Image 1 (tube, helix red, strand yellow):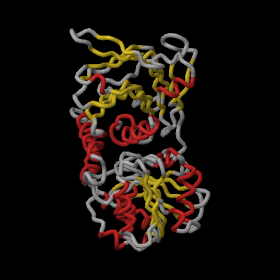
Image 2 (cartoon, one colour):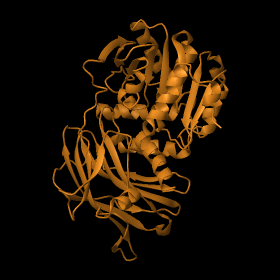
Image 3 (cartoon, helix red, strand yellow):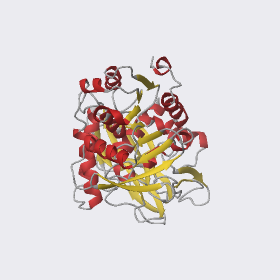
Image 4 (cartoon, helix red, strand yellow):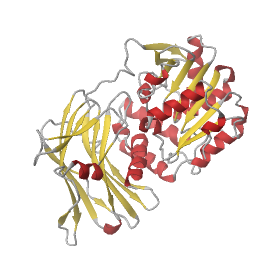
Length: 440
């Protein structure tokens, strides 16, 4: 059960609440523990840990992060040290803000985070509860100092598998005791900054960055919000053995530029249509994940002659409480607060992309009925996009195929890339019958 909770959290944390840790073209990682908050409602708590960060580029840092969710799965509190990042290559003890648990507090999540390239250490976590009279008392929780056996540590802490950060136990540089948790985020990606495969195209008043791999039918890859080509790092090797892959950084994201226009998925679709024209590609297959799926659906509606087959993962046609849980909107609002006072261009761009998630897309199920190309509609059983919305998308596209990945989240392509790639390859090659992909 705890494993399921962890996967749901990692999805929302990376996609929404962890914007400061999930910028494009960087490594980022998360370590966290889940604690039942109901027994301490009304009290204050804080978290303390020793952290060190040997950063390898200016944007890199580490943090302690704390989150509280209430009974309705609504975000009640979140802090990730965005305004005071850790960049010191010496063990230093840091303390989270003091957090008062509300009357409906259900879950406390806390741990360490890394952003961008570097080597990071975490050790000697402490969880403190404020008693009557104001004194702080430590609550004993398992494996807080990483001195237990591996099985206990693995049961007590979740380490994300969605990035290239490699987590391990170290016994040669602990803050206290013999062991600490070590995060190696030094690995450089072959994707999203490839001098051989990477190119720029001037289209629609901006410069679109794209990379090409493999041979065969052209396959356009479209990533999610605040993502990049690197989102498909686990798919491109397999897909490029079957197809001519064109992986794209959407405008204002990754290496692509933007011109100040309001971000909309229709504008993104216009960009992709113009890019295909520039590349002299009359028709392509499209694989879109999250925001990329939204763009793919719009392309199939507005530019039907350009789309051969379309596969979308975790896409939505419009946005409201019937599409995602209301807590997602609260998470987005919390993110916007974190950028308050930051006047940098990067922060302003992030705010525009967050706003896009809040108001877009603005289409209807009925518009999907104009789509005539073969379509595969995918989502995780525990996706941030509600299953009924995903089923409605498939139900309004004639002849579409539906695949709900059992137990999967919005991050299923990262969690199980082999199954995901096999599913889309079968679809794009026409090897799968509709009955093969229908969910029970």
